[in-house]
Amino acid sequence: MYALSTGQQTDRFQASAAAGEQPQTIEALFDRQAICQIDAGATLFHEGDKATHLFEVVEGVLRIVKIFGDGRRVITGFLHPGDLVGVSLKDRYLYSAEAVTHARFRRFGRREFQEAINASPSLRPLLFARLCDEMAVAQNQMVLLSRKNAEERMCSFLLAELHREQRAERAAATVELPMTRLDIADYLGLTIETVSRMITRLTRAGVISPVGRHSLRILKASALSRLAGDEEECEDCAPLVSMYG
Amino acid sequence: MYALSTGQQTDRFQASAAAGEQPQTIEALFDRQAICQIDAGATLFHEGDKATHLFEVVEGVLRIVKIFGDGRRVITGFLHPGDLVGVSLKDRYLYSAEAVTHARFRRFGRREFQEAINASPSLRPLLFARLCDEMAVAQNQMVLLSRKNAEERMCSFLLAELHREQRAERAAATVELPMTRLDIADYLGLTIETVSRMITRLTRAGVISPVGRHSLRILKASALSRLAGDEEECEDCAPLVSMYG
DNA sequence: CGCCTAATTGACAAATTTCAATGGTGGTGG
DNA sequence: CCACCACCATTGAAATTTGTCAATTAGGCG
Picture 1 (spheres, protein in one colour):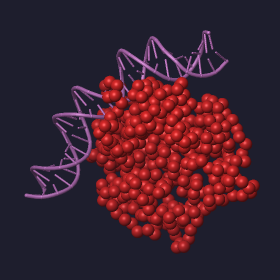
Picture 2 (cartoon, rainbow over the protein chains, first blue to last red):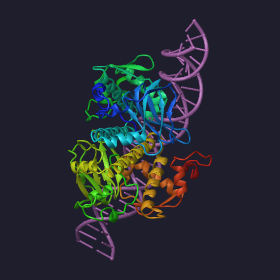
Picture 3 (cartoon, rainbow over the protein chains, first blue to last red):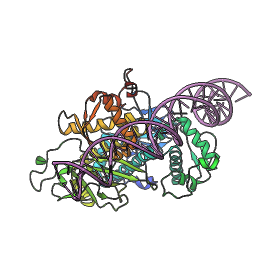
Picture 4 (tube, rainbow over the protein chains, first blue to last red):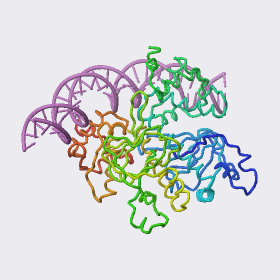
């Protein structure tokens, strides 16, 4: 999980209002950089490449991928606008970053970034806080992969996506899933078929309602939350199987 | 994985040779702190506690634990002498730290630590590098939990322990496992029984040889390495099941 | 509008968990 | 120093979950 998420929406205008001013947010560092583009399916960088740049996602969704020798694939995270990639690397990228959708991003040299951070006492805690957030996310993912069943994994994922949408847009009840079922499966440590079955199960239980292939409506966020398995266990909090035979 | 491992053995004497000198290693910061003790099974701090201190393990082994509401337990890492705990936290501990064995450690206030790091341009990159290492470890664990089977998990774990021992003592072929099978199971996302079966399987295959309950000899490190599943797949690299029916 | 690919669904297989019983180690007290 | 006890680990059998394979369906893009 080397990808860093913005915890909050930041005010870009304030951040870089005057030229020459010390940037007040990490994003502001990227503001001067040209915006690059990448097509859906294309690779931003490969695992093992010399880590020359960091990136800030401006638009679209990327996936962080690690591949085994024998072809097994793991997605350790998805990146959304505002997220940074490549901050916590040393020499080489430890994973590949690929575009799920057509995406736009800004690029920043690693050395310049290090220097900018080093030179700015106000930016350092921000970067540190991001690293901490990312550690927390990684740890949650370990908990999910270690001890949650397929249903809990799916619900946790949908819930996290819902919360992300709600951070952007108040009271959103629709979740966009631009990635394929295979991407979701490789993120949750499941197979395509199991992901599909869990979506079917949640649909039948009236918790969600698919809108095309890459979007779904959350009908019962509270149920999703219960089924995600993070909460204290209450006796009437059984998994869905019992709800439809 | 908020616990940070030392990549290298560091020379304490050089590090803090002269009083008043800027510390040249993160460990040197702790050198003045008194050494505390904790009994096997005791808790250093609880998940959710206000995060007031960081710790450096001096002797013994600790485990990092997260517990679900319904009792499911996840161990996200073990800590050994030289490791730091609590660096990448913000307000509260996100996990508990418990002593696997009787352990000795040094304590450091979070605020003082932040200030010391902030004041020292030479320490900052060291801390950053540790965070990066820890991220890499977390990512590897996600790969393990996501896509490795029980045998691969067990071999990966033993191999990592072997490498750690070899870092301390050249050509070590014995691995100490002071934790219980339940600890190992909760670390690898398996059950006690599966861990036990895998140890039996590896023993029967002549890869390892148990020495009491908490120690084992590595007879074929290369086999362990192959079976860990990280390498490129070669045709004669089948799992052990075929080796003993 | 139709094709191509992705997704769903079902039947079956495999891996791991669960449950239950046995075995062994290490620690403690006699 | 030995014996016993408690706990931990091992082993086996059955159950469950998820994966695999194969066939069908259906979105979405041209």
